[in-house]
Amino acid sequence: LVQPFDFRDAADFWDVLDEPELAFRLHALVGGTPAYRAMCIDRPRGAAEFDDWVIQRLLNPASAMFREGSALLYEEPELGDAALYHAVLGAICGGAHKRSDIAKRLGRQDSALTHPLEMLERVQLISKVNDALRSRRPLYQTTEPLIRLQHLVIRPFEARLVGRGRAHVWEQAQDTVESLIFGPHLEDLARSWCADHAAPETLGGLPSRCEPALIACREHKKNHELDVVVSADPPQQASRLLAIGEVKATTWQVGLNQLERLRHIRSLLPAGLLVGPPRLLLFSRQGFTSDLIAEAHTSTEVELIDLPRLYHGS
Image (cartoon, rainbow, N blue to C red):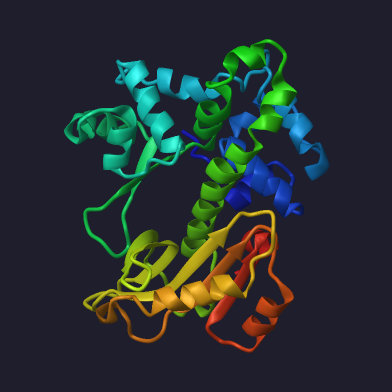
């Protein structure tokens, strides 16, 4: 059994390691399964050809990849009620990551989801991600990027895709792709980078785990979302937080306002988990504004990670 490649290995395998934007988009849609490169026949020769390639290779009913996202579920004989499991996967892909939110989306009791969630986790179509600051508050996410494409673009518009409306469907789906595919995927890659590729000097120590978190804020009367919380669990010592981070897959550059937001959230962290001030990590698909770059150059606590650094740096 060949496991899916890490995002860097996948970029190398697809021969796009020197094009981080293209590598990111490809991995966000097809993941790291080696067989998918042959099933796609070819790859886009650059970011400018990406949309046409998606329309031809992923959204074409005649292509091998068109139904692969559904086939992943049907290949599991343990999953009997396909409609229920598709509904659960669709809710997770649509942004319902807490069990209570999934139940609400499906109009079911919370307790009714125990078995389907356990089964989907057992066959490795979803995974459970713990909240770094709250015990027993897991979030659920799909493990295979192709499932997101299937449930957010292909299944809702299958009739239109079969009827040769592929280009229009892909154009109309761009907001969904940016917010529910590219955004969550960059968050996943950021956590993977911290766990597997970032240098201890970058994080302020050797990480044991990297998870998202919610932290309550009395000032703003809401919970703040933290995309990245890097923790260390030294043997026979208390856990401590090394770094916190924000991830932006937007089409504009990240500025100083996001750094100030992180600094505010850092002030809300439980004192018992802190040995010193955690590092502040900002991840951006489109880079950073000049004033933020200048601030980072004068600070030892701020790290800026763009796509080139994500794919090549530490």
